[in-house]
Amino acid sequence: MTVTAQSLDVLVSGYASIDESYHASRLAGAAQTGVLHGPVRPPPRPGGCGPNTARSLARLGIRVGLVTWLGDDPDGRGFLAGLAEAGVNLTGVELGDGPSPRSLMIYDAQGNAACYFHPSGSAAQRMSVEVAGLLSSVPWLALTVGPRALTEQLLDRRDSTTRVAWALKADPEAFPPALCRRLLSADLICLNHAELTFLTEALGQPAESGPMDLVEQGARCVALTRGPDGYTVATRGGAVEVTVEPIAVDDPSGAGDAFFAGILAGLISGEEPMDAAANGARLARAHLEEMPT
Image (cartoon, rainbow, N blue to C red; front, side):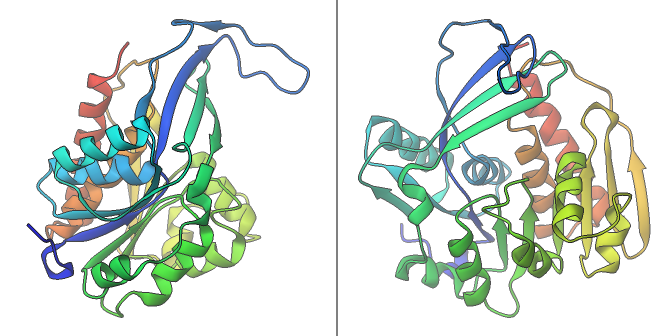
């Protein structure tokens, strides 16, 4: 069945990657050594903020299309098949020459992570005719970390009525200061404390800036995730902090993407921001419960 722009609820853009997650005694700095434990070679799995978000949205019954790039290799073709099986529209997915992008994730005992990403051919992805067709009348555009030029093209070409959701990552190549300033008017901004620090530094704002400061600069809803401490939701009506019951996992990768997908699904469905955020928290918890402990 052909899926048109009119039949999509949201178009998600962002890097795909084949992920390998390791666990270390510490996150070693320059000229330091950290000792790895667990499997010597963890099994790779499909990842990336864009695909993670799209899969979660599809699981919630949201009609979602994805804009990303994969290599025409066994990893990429398997990745593509999994997205199709999940119900994600693949019109905006490019399959190009070379290997698929890869991420190396290293976690310490406290759950802090270092990520090393090789974009392969995905860094050169730009707006295609097919993506322009999907974008022409889609109600929501969800932007995760991806090629800066592609993100700018999507913003330039979207309809004036298309609402924007932004899942921030502390990547200065994907989100330089000028683009961060442009995205401050998003209908939804989702980020954690480290990403908030990145954003305030990029914008030259005081270090103590918080979610309400982003709302005052144009964002309609800001969701700040606080790991096991819960999350904060800020809107023009004020900010509310919510606590959650902590859950212990060795590998929390993808939980933030699940939260973003859950709150976005709620907003797409017409829920109020607090109810939508609770939906995000439930989806993030379900994701963590499926992860190995």
